[in-house]
Amino acid sequence: MSQLSVKHLLGIKDLTPKDIELILETAGQFKEVINRPIKKVPSLRDVTIANVFFENSTRTRLSFELAQKRLSADTINFSAAASSVKKGETLLDTVNNILAMKVDMIVMRHASVGAPHFLAKHINANIVNAGDGTHEHPTQALLDSFSIQEKLGSVAGRKVCIFGDILHSRVALSNIFALQKQGAEVMVCGPSTLIPKFIGDLGVKVEFDLRKALLWCDVANVLRIQLERQTIKYFPTLREYSQYYGINKQLLDSLNKEIVIMHPGPINRGVELSSDVADSGHSIILDQVENGVAVRMAVLYLLAGNK
Image 1 (cartoon, rainbow, N blue to C red):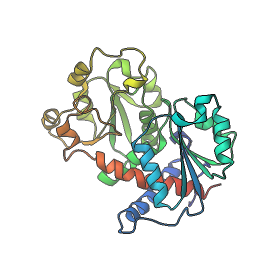
Image 2: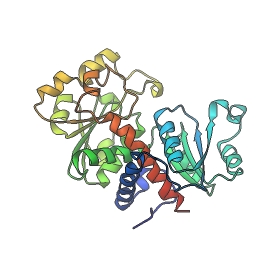
Image 3: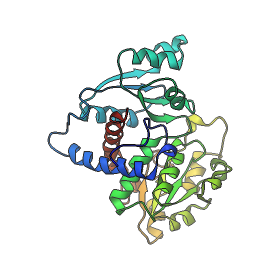
Image 4: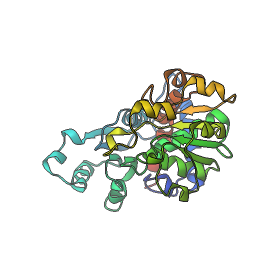
C-alpha cells in the first residue's frame, strides 16, 4: 500500500489501521530528512497550501508551516482575526475565495465541530483538520503514536492513560481512536466532572484515582485544563485540581516503575505537571514537538498524491 484510503484527513475515525501505519512509516523517513544538514526536499514544490486558522494556535500552526517549508510547498497564511470573517463573510465564501487563488490544500482549525467535514463536501482541495472544536485533532494523535512507537518500539499491547480534561479535549478523542486501531489499551483518568458520561462506550477504561491509573499505565498522556472552553466551574480551584490530579516527581518515584510522560502542550506547569516531571527523563514532550513536523510532512505528502 503506497497511498491513503482517504482524500482528506478529517479525523482518525476515518483512517484504517493501514493508513496509520503508512503515515507513521512515512514520518520515520521524513524524520531522517529533517535531521540532515540540508533539511529541505522538493516533494511538494508545485503544491500551494493555505493555513486557515479560525482559532489561536502556536505549536500546531508553526509545525504545519515548517512541515510545508521542508517539503518546498508554497504557503499562504490566513488568520480569522484579521479577515473578512469579521465583516460577516461565511466560512464557505472565505475558503472559495482562497481556492480561487489556485490553492491545492487547506489546513484548517475551527471552533465549530464538523467544520472541516462541511468543507470537504463542498470543495475539491484536500483538507487537513488541525482541530475542530472539542471533536478531533488527528495530527496530534498521529504524532503521539509516532512518539510512543519511537520510545517503546510499538504501540500495540501498550497501556496508555489519558489524564485531565477529557470532556473538552479534541486530543483525547483522536488519541483514543488512534491507539485502539493500533492495538493499545486505553484508560482515561480525571475528575468525574471532566469525564464524558458515555466514554466507556468507546471501549476505554475509566479511573478517577490518579495513583491507580499511574500504576496501570505504561504511558501517561497528560492534558491541560482547557479553561477557555469551560462555561461553568467543573472543580473548585486549580490548586485543588493539582492536589488530586497533578503529577509530580515525588509521586512518580513512589510508584517504583518507569512511566513515559507526554503532553500535547501548552503545559500549565504546577497544575497538571510539575516542572521536575515535565523536564525529567520520563518526559518525551520535546520529542513530540520534533515528531510533529515529521508526521505533518508525511500527512501533507501522502494527501498531495491522493487527489
